[in-house]
Length: 407
Ligand SMILES: Cc1ncc(COP(=O)(O)O)c(C=O)c1O
Image (cartoon, rainbow, N blue to C red; front, side):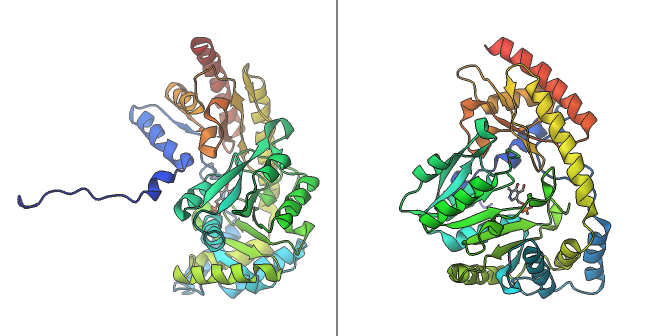
């Protein structure tokens, strides 16, 4: 730089200060621990492939064949017809009749969340988000200048939504109800009566429902019905992807389905307009969507059985540690145990102390919107039963010491 110039700082937009994504942020702390030569056990990221589960070969072949066949250009911005048709046929087979023009192929559920919220909320509008929540919802709302209103889900009722608290959280600015079922970070599955009540509350207040159904095929006892099956006229935008139930999170391939109600026609047109601006989601992987939804799904049977076993091991282990509790998960690969923290301590302090002492990385509950003093932390139970059992033994030993010394 020439000496006549003053080095001016380059400012960062203030919206970034409101944006936080604890699941990845905490990895920085883990890397610092790793740099000291200590082995880190990553029980923090929900990536089944990283844990050794394999993407089904016929999906890999469909995407690879698309590349070899020269499908490497841009594709239509709402997605290739074969993928949209396959998603529509899958929803119809599950009891939600929709035409392919109501399907958008997106860059994972993540982009579907961003497209839907961008199309539905104004600056200053409010969105009902569960507490705890998957943090991308609040991160996107921060970018949009909209506000999350947390509705409680209740660990003493299997992490089901507290419907009275949900009703009391609605204001004239509320536009959208986010429902994450099966749930990350709690592993909860909502009963039919609760699902019906959620739809009814949304209808009473003219809210659109964002139904995050990325784990609907990962119920421990089998695939779960989609929310829209309870009322095919309800204004539900259903979101899912190949990431979890099809074991291909790195492909960034998902979908958004707008229920067949004319009330969603304008939001759907708005989302298509926004999707035009990003040209398309990754093309070759879209060729695997039909292979996934209309082909062999037997991998899900063994995956669900593996998850059910790990879920049982997890709940049993945490409930056996003095000072800890854990609601048994019913789906997906997450559990949210809690530790009774001494007054003045936070969940993040506990998680960082655990990391430094044992090398085990979990995510503090406040990263999902819970009060820091409540002592929750999320565990991803994708590692092998033997690795999990060893990690839980170490967490137990650490916790006994932690509670003895900080009491
Ligand atoms: C509830 C929930 N929604 C959305 C996503 C994002 O998924 P995708 O990989 O499809 O973008 C995740 C990922 O963990 C999730 O847990």
